[in-house]
Image (tube, rainbow, N blue to C red; front, side):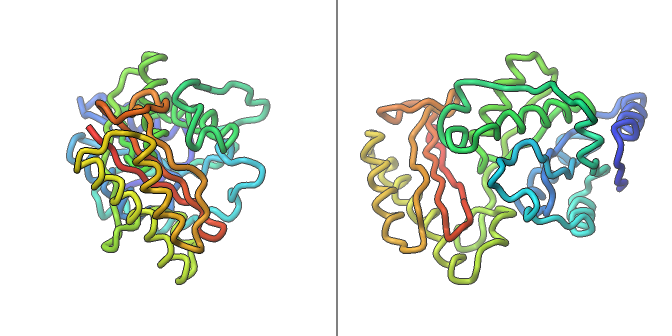
Length: 280
């Protein structure tokens, strides 16, 4: 397993793999890898001959009041996590390598980014789409792997890949959870012991909503109320949003029909956590 810092090094390595007729998977990450990331790497290793994992805390997807400097980083930990899953290459560039002086070109989207996190984090998805498109162009993978926990990101990446004719397949992987139900996230490290306990209200509330759907409830407003009422029973929780949207275009729906995303964002203390379930 290798770690490289420059675009030229990545391209030379992948070019060598291509000469051997090998397939390539890409797992884009911001590092501080957990079991959720490792599940993506394992899937890529199973599907492809070689796997590249990018470890890059992307500055242009953070807002001015967000946690760029505080975002956890541990490259040695990440190297061990990638190697344990059988990954072949870590691309760990400096911001100046990805965004040289006078960088002025961005990839932006509409529709899928209008609601949920896109409505609350100005410029976030422009930053995500720009860095992901750069990674696609640098690595040139056959397949790229994204987790369902960031469902709006997944829908948005799928959309720009379609719209801009990127020649690769986007593979969605299920949410990985702690034994008590909390969705794996690098931001879980921000939680105190008391906040960690309180954060269980996210998965508990979503489960109530999912059970209602399983029992036949299809009215979106009724599902939102069930989840919201449950979230409000936790004193440390501050609800950012509870939404029911079409999975593909991330627009609100009145009834659960077809592929539907039920998504929440909740502050536990100062930490903003997201979670969701998908109904098909």
